[in-house]
Length: 308
Ligand code: HEC
Ligand code: HEC
Image (tube, rainbow, N blue to C red; front, side, top):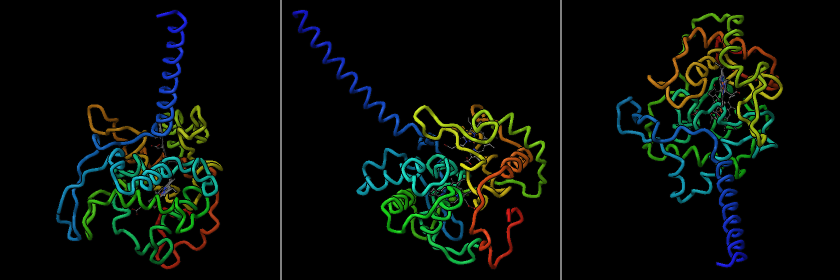
């Protein structure tokens, strides 16, 4: 081969190489969010209204979305839940994504999962609003409180897409049945919190990721890597996560994030008292107010850890 042609071929190969690298970079950018995938997810029982086991639930992996008839909508829903702050800037008022709290894309038992959400859990009566609400309103509740933002219209394509993702997770569960997995893990709610101890535990176990001032941290491309736990850019006082035992349960069963909690590779399980103390510390740091709070629990008794 003549040297000139060899140079030209070299340039073409280099250009192709750059394109491949750029494409891989884009894919990584889209898919780098942590996912608990089917391989590591447990098989869960499907139970009927009498709690009899009527089948087994296989936690679907994201790759399975591609073969669906409505793949585009489900994939959009998945992205919206993972990258909410970036994709819905008009509706999100802080630096959180939905899946900052709905762990592993809403597939993890004890991690505020969505496994039953789209499968007949709504409409249902809830004590906080004191009436029956549908799933759209439930999602908008998290937008206004957990995301300190504004609701999406019922027929907005983004709302429809999130509903399609949730329905996909429940697609193999028969009518009237549900996946036997709690959204919140057990926590001893008779424990009294020690906030001073919680501060010390926070500094030792949480501040490395969430910051000394709970401010969180962004990654090199400006996306949220570690979400804020308090301050103007965190969830407001009306959020479920602002309640002591909900926060303690979340922390005990999900933090620090790890793919497995089982020995020998999983992390050590946090004692309930530590989780309650840490939660008491961070939920009571300054955070946005929620203007609609006066309307909560209009008929039913307030939970004992309600903040107002
Ligand atoms: C700060 C944490 C946090 C964030 C961020 C968050 N949520 Fe939630 N969400 C919760 C908690 C905790 C619950 C459980 C119940 C509660 O609020 O008491 C919940 C409950 C839900 C439920 C009810 C699930 C069921 O099966 O009944 C849905 C649906 C939901 N969230 C959707 C969303 C969506 C969509 C977003 C983003 C727009 C979002 N959440 C953001 C913490 C959060
Ligand atoms: C290794 C880094 C790391 C450590 C250590 C860690 N977290 Fe997190 N935390 C995360 C990530 C990442 C998320 C978002 C979930 C996701 O993206 O899967 C998160 C989410 C949260 C959330 C819900 C979202 C929010 O901002 O309110 C709370 C609450 C939380 N962590 C509390 C804690 C507490 C308390 C500790 C200490 C016991 C802790 N975390 C330790 C990385 C960490």
